[in-house]
Length: 285
Image 1 (cartoon, one colour):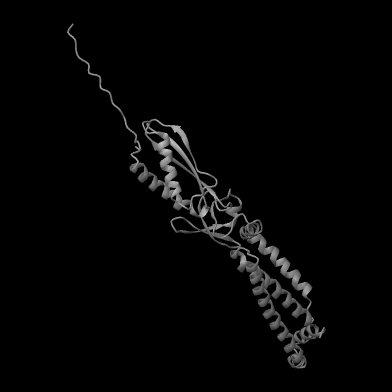
Image 2 (cartoon, rainbow, N blue to C red):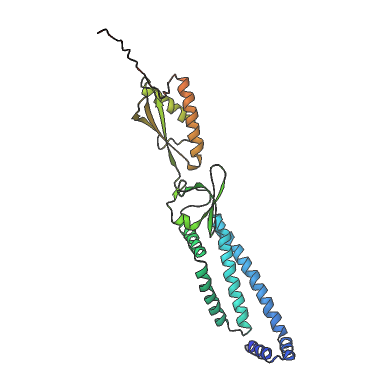
């Protein structure tokens, strides 16, 4: 069988079609057997790639890269099976590999941008600066990571828009991952009038905080005078919560603090301008 490709090539060059038919007929059982092995090899490749995904799920690997790993494993195994099939037929695979390598170099020169995206995707998958479900900010856009692909990453913004970001943009930007830690601080400012008792306002805010179970009690909430404004005392209120509860807690504090201030008679000042008019009277010379 090692001379199969050579004999076939000679018959083709000499246009001896009867010889080609006789050669194929003589080698038909082996060709069928080799073809069956090829199909079985492809089937095993699919099974191995699917098994790899199950292992990744069991290990808790980010689901967004399951399909990518599955595709890579399946492709590599099928290429190996196909090359083994050609080699079994007596075909020189070394020249084929060299041709593919040369073609790959030529294609790489024409697809530099795509290669850059691919490399960036690999860096993200390896370094894992974020995962699916994380809320990130890359400067130009922010949102929840929906899926990490090898060429791009998709985000869902707060107003439910789907944004497709090239991976090269992400790797060349400063990425803020708001879910990297298990707690996040919310910095709030509440203005009260200069005539309001500061301790009374602090007690009102603590009461609002106490009613919400999403706000952590450790670290303890911090409330103190942050600034003496032009028309108000500005209280700094620093509280902690799970990153996923950031916005519900933020809006809760905005609404409930106003209601609590109203119940306790605490005045929230607004900007005002006092105008003093001096009356000038004419005097007789």
